[in-house]
Amino acid sequence: MGLFQSTSPVVPASPLAGKVRVTDDEFIQLRDFIYQQSGIFIAEARKYLIENRLNNRIRELNLKTFGEYYYYLRFDPHRRNELTKLFEVITTNETSFWRNPPQLKVFQDVVLTAEIEKIRANRGRRLRIWSAGCSTGEEPYTLAIILHEVLKSEINAWDIKITANDLSEAVLAAARKGVYTDYALRTTPKSIIDTYFIKDGTNYQVDPRLKRLISFGPVNLSDRMLLKRIERSNIVFCRNVIIYFDDEMKRQVIESFYDNLLPGGCMLIGHSESLHNISRAFKPEYHTGTIVYRKEA
Image (tube, rainbow, N blue to C red; front, side, top):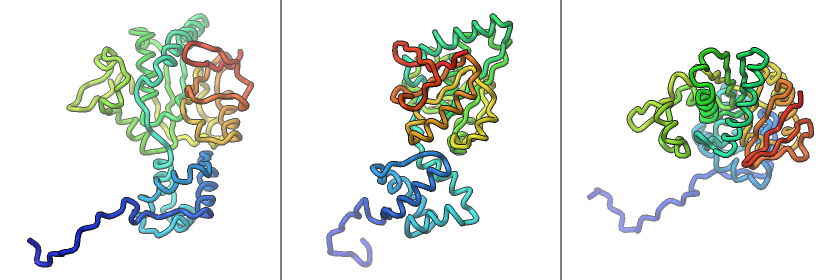
């Protein structure tokens, strides 16, 4: 029993206690700043996202308001490090291996198979795939697995590179490490897990064969000049990324993907995303479970 025992009932702290509220002006400042830095547009209806996700950053920096946080991002000597942390908390990184199996089946059986046959017909062995918005690596590793499944032992004779990019350095670090929980593998066939993952306690380490095919690096999709330096691709994957952009930024990013693709190359986007009113440059090909957007030769 404590020396000073209170006879008053203990009132539990409110979950909102200590939470910093964002004013309309502060929201506009931060929204515009985030858009300028990344191309990510946060609509007014999602003001709560700014409030919920940035409260921890404000507390950790010992700031009192979102206005102070905005000025920190603009003028503090450590603003570059904080910008990285800002990108980490405002982008959603919920993903998994073998996400959207119908689309991956079309990729494996139609897109990739045809692309490999075309390359072989031209006596080539060089294949480039761009995973734009790769998050913690599940997508590019899935693509690497599919390449192994299609090419089998012949893969060693090919010059293959999957360029995997994301805005956040933190998720790229996790992707390079290549260690995942069973939750990340929840939609992955058991035969694939047994073949391409090494069990390590309760976690799974990706097979080094997969890592050799992938080059991870940071990319801001709003930086057009930076995107021009990405090696030209046979296939571009950009799933569940352009939903964060307004229409103007979507047009800009999709145009960059089009320019990056080699003639006859294909782009695949998220199943909830559409190029309607965004671009007519691609020829859509309709398959069960997905649309493939092709750059005509």
